[in-house]
Image: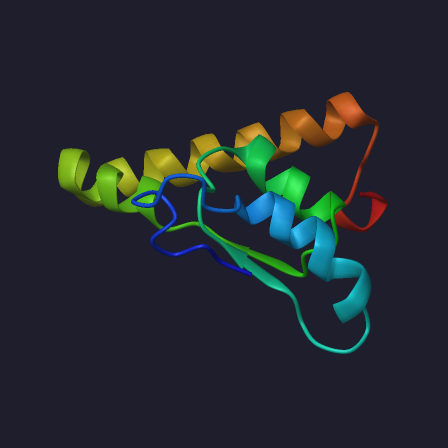
Length: 99
């Protein structure tokens, strides 16, 4: 599920809206991967809660690479992981499967 180019188009359907509509239809038929607009751990958790099997995160790591090299990417990965773990804890979830 992706809205590549959505950031350039006014009124494009957001990825999460599409995911919400597609997930019930695709469940147990195909793997559902989400891409587009994922910036924070909370975005990852939302996608998983809505039925995504995988969440692709690209742009934040590109920014991190440009600004801080490989150290920047490591810091961005750590930050994303911590945000996912914090969000899950606030939801009372211990594992991804609990979502």
